[in-house]
Length: 155
Image (cartoon, rainbow, N blue to C red; front, side, top):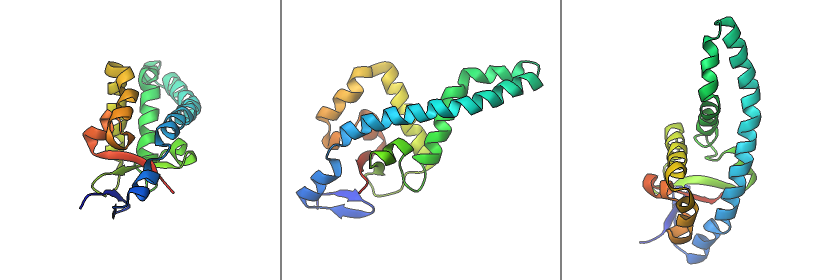
């Protein structure tokens, strides 16, 4: 039986399958921008804490500024994408979520690995990340394919 899995149920009808992926590519790009704006806002209070930590440690804490943005982003992704809704706040605003092809849930570790592969893929193959969605089934990216995940409409 061929079909896709959504919330543990196999979807077999083509119209249901189509609705899961309708507009996902555009929604995913908008969600990315929203998430990075949110992460940018989250970095401000974390940066203040690191600055104060640097004063208390006579400058040693300021070394954390080098990893401040990636660390904040990874905590954000682990808490949101690896949470019960399986979506970051930007993805929730765009009504999409990350799903595993085997029907399991996305845990925080998978969410972090998904994000790290995205960053690594962009560092090496920037244009191919988005171009892959034009050719892979269900508008998946390379890191989705590697991890057995897919982004689908949440509703």
